[in-house]
Image (cartoon, rainbow, N blue to C red; front, side, top):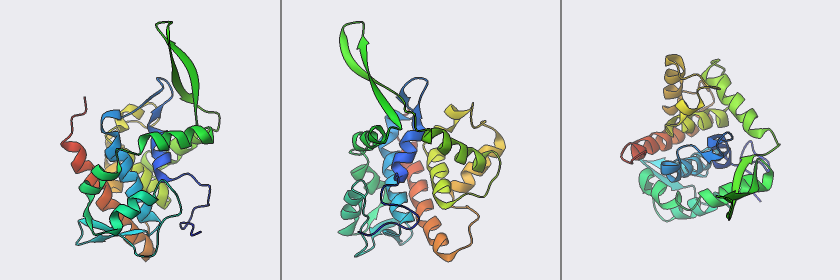
Length: 228
């Protein structure tokens, strides 16, 4: 089994990290729910780029790297979809994004990052409510993103991609208590969206280019969708 660079077999995917960050413990809801499928799709494509499973064609389309599929079942369907021919990023987002929410949430529940608890609506109807688990992983992820956006730390590659995707989702203002919504933070977030991560390695430069293409295509897609 091929393991992506910098990841272990049981490591969370980037899309899991993103959904966990978007989860709001205070309300038990997920920020940006109305446009979530585009954002999660973007995280999957970015993760494929980080693992060098996809590359860009003509600067605007993405395709799978032949013979190099991802090992994770959450990522494989997107790689398979892109293996037939190069696709526009927005086309790919619309194709792979809608099916992601439930399996990604199930992963987070299985890992204990999010818990489900029984709940009654109007004292009659049984349902389940989501609450933060006891792993502390969401807090650690948020601290990593805060260091990059607020404190100006030089990010690791995955943290840079995560922060860029979080910015692309349009939900950063909802994190104001942990990540102040200030002009320097906004400027740094936009730099990350463009792929300005401050990395030097040539391989990382390629990864940044692919990920920046994905992130910016996600932003374009979100601008034409209602956020209400």
